[in-house]
Length: 272
Image: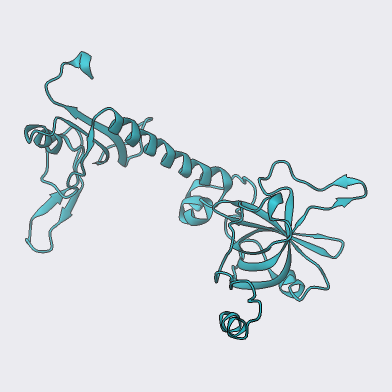
């Protein structure tokens, strides 16, 4: 298409639209009523497939949301649409249109950000086919935890867990912003350290270079943050990874966890 555009320009013709990105022109959470009539290219995971009287509806999902894709029996995309299954990765080309009124009833989905529109597929490409899944992604099924952890990458595709991961990201970003506004400086302290007399046992990492020697993973960055203070930096914080070989507790996972670590110079307890 790029060569055709150049040729049209050389001959004084009207160039066609620029070629679409290989995988997408929009995300699956981006299309709105203002995009009606536009050509869109989407890539994502097949959330589910529904057959409504010959028309096939595919809920296409990516990190940003869901878009309803329609495959008409007269479309060349219909044959491929019939073959796709949940969690296949596909690319869809099509035109954006308003969701129709059927039997006097609107088909708009008010619970979906893209719920006013749908994409009528003209082309579908299968990017990655999936076998039958050991853990379904659609819905919120109650599966044994060991199975969910084995297939963690599937479990994290589920809406609730995906949202939890993004919530953690937002919390950490908020902490960093607030600590910076309060005059604290973020430092990254070493992970491979010497063993320290903390309350729990250390996790030890053998040294490849120094035979018979071991590093310890830090139970807390206590010594390093004190070094930061005596180096004259005044205020320190870190979202610090901590490693402790101890029994599980109600407030943290066994083995490793993250904590907001803070240190200040020339202050009393009331100043913290």
